[in-house]
Structures are given as structure tokens and as C-alpha cells.
Amino acid sequence: MTSIESALIKKMLHHEERVVSKDELIRNIGREPEQYRGLEMCLSRLQEKFKRANDGERLFRAVRNRGYCLTQKIKKPIDLNPSRR
Image (cartoon, rainbow, N blue to C red):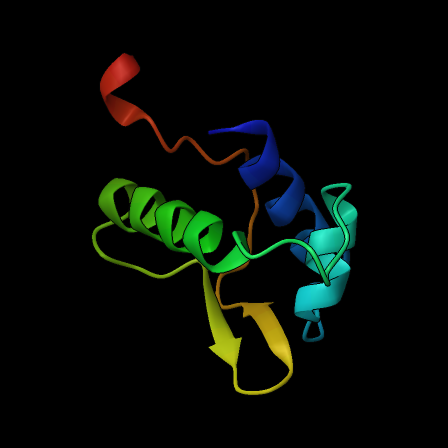
């Protein structure tokens, strides 16, 4: 997992009971929302890693015009690279 992916998960975990806006997520990784366009790509890659490691289950979902929210309760550290064991 990249440092950006880790920061995105931590932000969503910190607010797991609500939708986190795109702007909040972008600021959390130290970027300015007006200048950063890579959030969706980062989230897409993160979602695919999670799905591969967890039988197709999604970690989060997009909430139209609002942001993203977790769809899973996280109880232990996420291993998105199970083949490295």
C-alpha cells in the first residue's frame, strides 16, 4: 500500500460513520483540491487492491456529489499484498 493510499484509509477510518468529501481527502494527503486531479485514480487502485485481497468485497463507496464512505468495518490492519507472506 502506498503512503497516499494509507493516508486515504486513515482519513476515512477517522470519520467512518460519515461521508468524507473529496476536498477533505485531498487536503489530508497534503494537496490542494483545485490543483489535484489524481484522487479518483488513487481510490480506484486502492479499491482494486482491497477487492483482490478480500474476495471481491469493496472497502468504500462513492456518494454522488458528496465524497466517499467506508462500507466495511475495519478490525485489524489491512493486508493488501497477501502474496508477500
